[in-house]
Length: 206
Image (cartoon, rainbow, N blue to C red; front, top):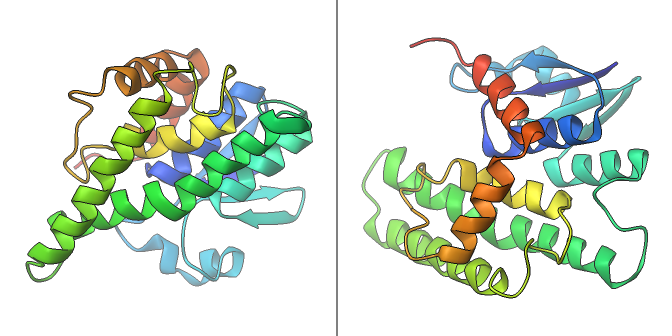
């Protein structure tokens, strides 16, 4: 059975959503990043980069959420077009997520919540960039139901991870009607709800 080493993070929930959507059984192994479990020797043996998620499939170890999404899509033949423009559009969004959305959201949240000292310039820079990216997505979704086109794909799963945790960088979907519609549509999918419930259940009570 596939193992997923994860926590309730934007990148972790993506993998669980994909597995639930594809109907693949998996064993969820909690890695409490709040306590530093990702720095433990046993975890670093799986991912020397010390980050979740990690997928283990019959001895094959894979890190990086986007790579895991592609692997699962190729393995099952689901949520990723086989060829043509549709396939390229999915990869376009995956690369946009990795180079733009994820760094902007993550850094905006860090400088607002976790920086040892106030860094107003950095906080403003990443917050403005994250808000700009929300605008780009809202504009794209004005013309199509999903981020890569007409069908739900791993590109939607990728973006959903950070939109699910939009409160971390202290952003909202206010004034973004198309993005709000998309988020509500994705959040209502049974597989998404199941994945969110499973990943939230591994967070220890405060």
